[in-house]
Every structure is written in structure tokens, then in C-alpha cells.
Length: 253
Image 1 (tube, rainbow, N blue to C red):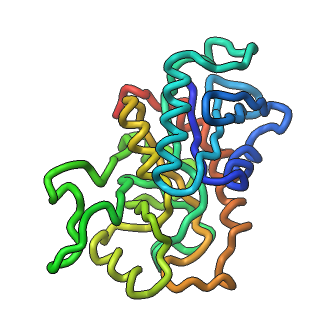
Image 2: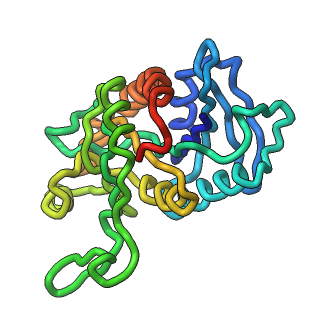
């Protein structure tokens, strides 16, 4: 199984990589991006290609699409590839840190999306926000495979619920309350998941979103952020992920 893991920035990518043996890492280039390939300690049937895709849904979608296209065309430049590490991906994971809605997703906890929703893709009207779907086009939600969400939640202890993709990080209690009013199942917000999911869906590849909570959603209080704790939680989650993926059938959506 080949898994593409898309984070926003290098520190998140490195937190994921820390779950694997350092000697197993191998960097290689594709058009427009550099991937870092790792595998669980002791080997096994899964390899992970890690991608720092950029901040925001547009950058995340573009970089993820580039990696998926290169894989589908067998454009990897690594001469050491074998039958596990070439060809299309079986799964894409959007991963990183994010804000958690309190008290359901406390700082330091893990959130696994059972729906990935673009929270601000639509139009403001006199009657309030209208999502793009109600305007008659587009989509605002992607749903990861239910069986895989259950399996990953079981091994990582992650809470499951909606993860919102926003273009602007929430900075007020009023904005947080409005998002919760429109999305009552929301547990977390981040900036890349919907873009990653759009690219994965275009390629017919299932997608997950896994977030470690670094701060509460609401007023920006840097003193309350726990980025180090969240990155450590992300490392821990990926260290437990392989058994759930090995037991999952990619054709079981």
C-alpha cells in the first residue's frame, strides 16, 4: 500500500516522519514538489510519502494533485523503487495541527475527520452565509471511508467529527460561535483538508484528515497554544497507524 501524507509546513511533515525510523527516510523529487519516503520500523506492506504542500486549500490542492499525477504516471525519480513504491496511491492523508472547538476537542487531543468541509466556500447574503452547493454548483464536503475512520480512531484514540477548512483562521469568540452554529458537529478547523480532499477525489483516491489540536478555536491567545504538544501527538498517532491501514481494504469505501 502506498500512502501520500500532505501537511502544510515542514515542521508538521517532520513530526510525521519522527514516527518512523530515521534511516528509512529517502527524499526524491517530482515536478513541483519534493517527497520524503518513510516506512514503519521493521518493514511491512506500507510506505508513506510525505509532502509539505503549503498553507491553505489552494496550495494544498495543487501540490497534492501534482504528487498524485506523478504517481499515476510513474514519474518517480527514485531508482530504488519496487512494486510497493511505484504506481498510484491507495490513500491520501491530510495531516497536521489545527484549532479545536472547546470543550469537545481539547488542546493536545487528536481529531479524525468523518467529514471534511469547506466552511467559507460560498456567498454572503442578506440572510447570512450560503454555501456554494446551495448556489447550485460545487461541493463543500468530502466524506472519508467510514470503515477506515473507525479503524484509525480505534488505534489512535482520536475523536471523530467534522473538520472545517477555513481560509482565515478564527480569531474571535463570535466567529467561533458562528462556525459552530453552521457546523454543529465540527471538532476542529485547519486550512488544507478540503484542498487535499478535492485533489484526492479528482484522482479517485480515498482521503483522511487527521489533526492534533494545538490551540482553542476562538480569540487568538498565543500563551494558550501548545504547538509542541500537538506535534508530539501527531507523531504518536502516525506511530500507531500502520495496523489499521494494513487491515483495511481500499475498495471498502
